Length: 230
View 1 (spheres, rainbow, N blue to C red):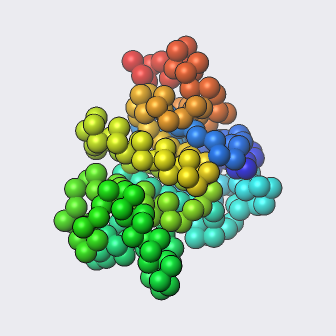
View 2: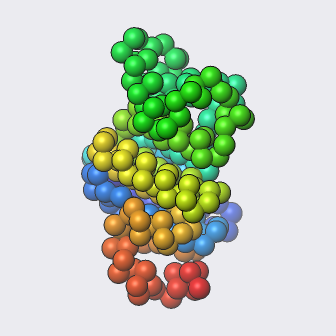
């Protein structure tokens, strides 16, 4: 489904290289030290950065020069990408229409997603009036509505406590099951990787390793990953 073919990007004295494939519906964690290149990898896949060489392919179609909005993916980051001037309802509705032009059927779908995320009664609130967990649930509800085949998450739950993080991981798994989307998630937590990602990509010093089975990788990590995990 997603192929990074001979990717290489140099920024100053840092070079990222990647060459791997992800299958449709796969769930993959991305783990490695800060500054290793995880976010740069996401920038390339999402279209925020263009590689010096190589290609980003989606089902065989070359997306390397395609703008972010034209790529078949939803993005969730630690700050959840909610627009502060819009209500929770409007933020979720962006998953259907960037112009917020909704039919009656669309409105029903938005309300259903909000209810599913446990946010009923909060529709009129702005993001600043929501807790971190509520903001995360709103972002996941929007991803559910967008129904894009790849969900990319960059440490979306790192600021949450254990109980709330567990709830968010369960909701994410439900979203993935319902939509059939693939997942690519940056995390610093081996526990999160084990909880939701059967395979893991290790990134160290700009080297992006192909996906490996998560349990086996964490049971016997290579030296760089072992040093990072302590």
